[in-house]
Image (cartoon, rainbow, N blue to C red; front, side):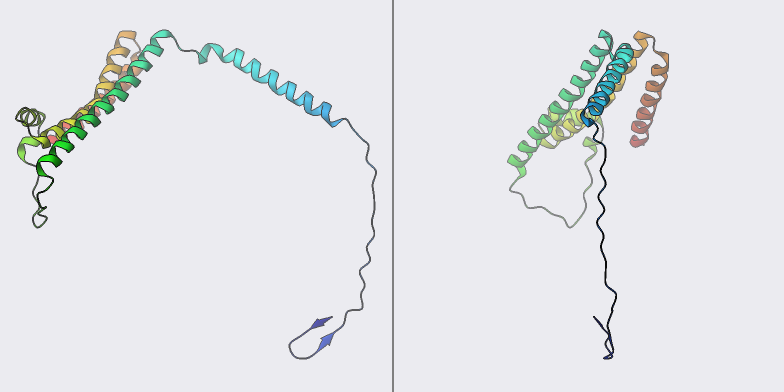
Length: 181
């Protein structure tokens, strides 16, 4: 029975008839099809790996270069982080209790704007100089990686990689020179 808001009632006299139909299907051995598919896929993977095995293996020089570059990046970042941490601790020991004056912006002193100025500040015992040295080491780590890659590719006579690495080195050099002026 359905009711509408305006008081009219509508009665449905239709009855729903249901009929159940059952179908009998042939039984197949489904497990054999699955096993056959698994065997085919495993054999295809093994054949693909055997055919590509020559291109997937690295030569010893490639493996040495990869290990050298990964260690260079890993230890470069660790050393730079340790230097920044040391400088930060020394800075907090010396200047941690001083009140901060945020009324006027004070730029970086000129001695921290060049690598030679940073080295002079470190030699004079400046904790801010030690922090800046750590940041310079952090910047120098990927640059050193590009230089090592370039020298290795030149030695291996991989001229395509020499060209690409030279372009990367040129863009890094341009960005450093452009930042100085």
